[in-house]
Image (cartoon, rainbow, N blue to C red; front, side, top):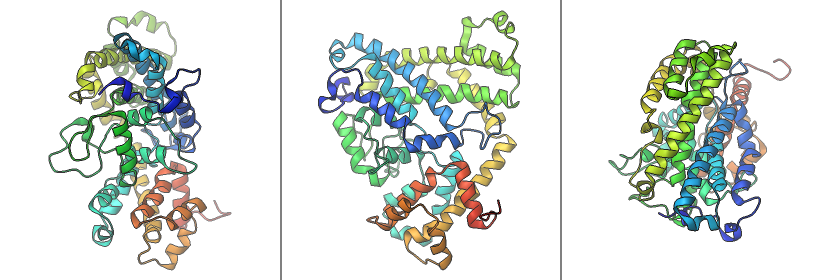
Length: 435
């Protein structure tokens, strides 16, 4: 693979200007309807009451900020190595591509986070005998293994008002898992193949994208990653490790001393305990350490990326940068503590369980009408509750599979509170005028 083709903007976009096509990518994502919905979607703590706890929107903005720093720093070094690239691209372009892909990285996540993903998958798995014969093996695998990354790729490419018309490099950098949902047995040893990146409805779009950019193909409809996808992944890894730890402290799930020890372990020689003690607010102390830790992790990730440029371009490199940087052992310890004390906190598990049931019930209410099989009068009444554009898409879809994809666009696009509100109306818990 070569950078000139990997960064192809298409047509006349290859010329430098004050506002590049990559800048437009960023603007289109941040002003898009699906992105705005992230303000009410679960990050770690569903429906948080504290205003300092992150949701998907604040998480995405922070990942984008880190992604910009990673991309720009890498770009400055790459342009020194490859002099010809500077004729049509700048370090800022590397930063904006990575920032834009990072900004959109969670745009396909359903309500209630991973619990919502599991609920969608479980719904179809539990109805295999009833529905599987209506679909191809690949289509059925898509339904039984809902993947937020593939849903995000679909949203970014969906025709109509949601189609964002992003550049090819940004779309490719967004794609962490370049394969379909179903591959031959024994074909998933690579990290970049542990999940999948597109549904069958976007197969042609995906293949054309990666072929155009010259991304190296593996066998059986699998590809290596676009190089900048490694930086997008690193931005996400840095933020969820460090900022989830900060949230855990702010929620009282992790002690002040333990949080400082983790942060100080990353910061190393730059840690100044006397300066920290001069800050009266413990929350501000952790905020300072968080900023310093993120800065250190950015530098380590960029150095590792540049050291492995050749193996990344050859497709041989296939490991998370966060797993190989000098701070990887500390990050692994943070991850273990976060799982035990944050992600499995009682209040998190309780709301995740409720969220699973909510999404399951919504699917049970609308899938029969979308499929057009054994539709009852109750199903017909519920179907009328869907937005007009969703009903139109379902009724005019070219196949049963595409009808379900349109329904899943609606359900996975709902916010936590929107899903909960519709669930209450459908189940009779909440009635108009009696809230």
